Length: 102
Image (cartoon, rainbow, N blue to C red):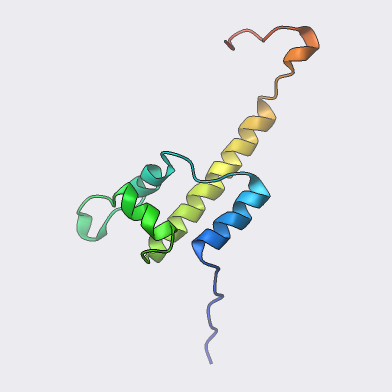
């Protein structure tokens, strides 16, 4: 007997859990960025941001787009976490901003 694949929750549920854990959510422009990562079959361009939005809201079904969206959001969370930890600035300690930040 073959193994049955582990069923993953619908994307809106996954996104709610992911946002709760990481604080990262889909923002303006993310649909287009995800669309640019998802070429259509037969090289006929990329999907529209509106189609991506419908897939992620479970109005349409497309596992490839859902998988790429999850990967995109995990990468976004990783980058934001790294950026925030490396660039923590305590402005109140000396009363002014460091050079180069305006």
